Length: 412
Image 1: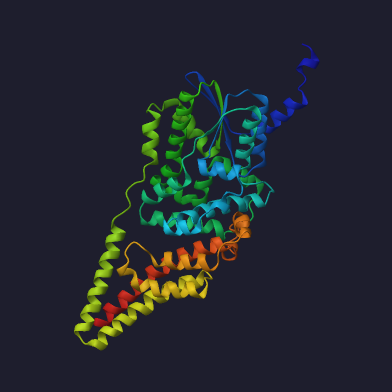
Image 2: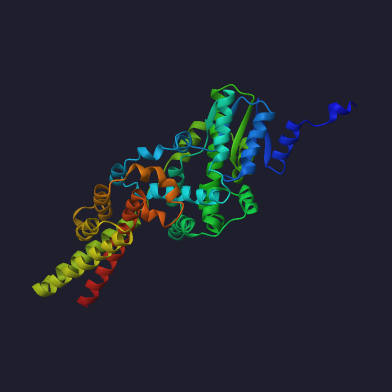
C-alpha cells in the first residue's frame, strides 16, 4: 500500500476530530438518506461538527430544528425591533412573549460562559447551506404552539412546573461546566429547562419531546416529497435524535394531516373560568347581602373589595417597578373586573406603562442580553412592561380571592 495514500490529510484529521464522539445517525427511507447530527444548542463542538459534515460530505438539502420565527431571528438579529408592544398587550400575548424571552435567556446565560452565540450550530448550518446553494428546511413546530400545547395538556401541578421551570431559568446563576453543556446532547433545551418535571410527567414530556419528534419527521417527509433529494443533513438537538430516527423508520401517516393534528391547540380548560365566575357571583351576592343588613355594612363590603382587589393589583405593578400612573391604573381597573370580562386589569396597566415609558431603540437592541439576567427584566422597558402585565395579573387574582374571603367571613 502506498504510504502517502494512506496518510490522512490535515482536512481529514480535522473532520475526524470534529466528529469524534458527536452523535451522528444515518437513516435511509426510500431513496433518501438522512444524516442526523445531534447537537447541544450551546456548544463549540456542535458548531465544529456541522462545519465538518458539510465540508466532508455532499448534501442536497439542510434541515434545521427551527420554526419560521426562530429562523428569522437568526437571519435578522434586530427582529425584536419590529415587536409591537401595544399589539402584544391587546392580543393577550404578553405571557407567551415573556416565556419566549425566558427560553432565550436560559440559552444565552449558558452561552455567555463560553463566548458562543445561542443557536450558533443552527446558524452554521444555515450559512453552510447558503454557501453551497442548498435549500434550507425548517422542520420544528413553532415554540408558542409547543408551550401552549404543553400548558393545556397537563394538570394544575404540571402547569406550575412549566411556569416554575421558566422562572428558575432566570434566577439560577450557577456556572455550568463545558462538560455539562456537552451533556445537553443527551437531552433537549426545553426538556432541560423543566428538568425532572418533564421526565416525571408523560404528557408534558410527550408534548415537549415526543410530539416534536413526530412533527419534525413529518416535515422531513413532506419536504422530501416536494423536492427530489438523495441526501439530507438534519441538524437537531440530540434529545430528538433517537426519536426522529425511530419515526423515520416507522412513521406511515400522511404528513400534512399529521402536521395539522400536532399543531392544533387543545381546548382551554373551562373550570378556571367557571371557578372565577362562581367566585365573583358569590362575592357580588355577599356584597348585596351586606346591603340588606344596612348601608354601612354594604359600604364596608364594597370598601373591602376595592382595597384588596385593587391593592394587590397595585402591589403587582409596584413589584414590576411600574410608573406611578401604571400603579394607579392597576388599582382602579382591578375592582372593575366584573364589569369588563375578558379585559384584565393587567392589560390597562401594561398599556399605560408602555405609553408612558415607550421602548427606546436601545431597549430593543439590548433586550436579549438584558433578559439573560433576572435584574435586566427591570432595567429594560420592554421586559419591564411584560413583567407589569404578569405581576398585575397575579396580584388581581390573589386580591380578588382575599377580598372575597374577608367579605364572606365578616358576614358570618
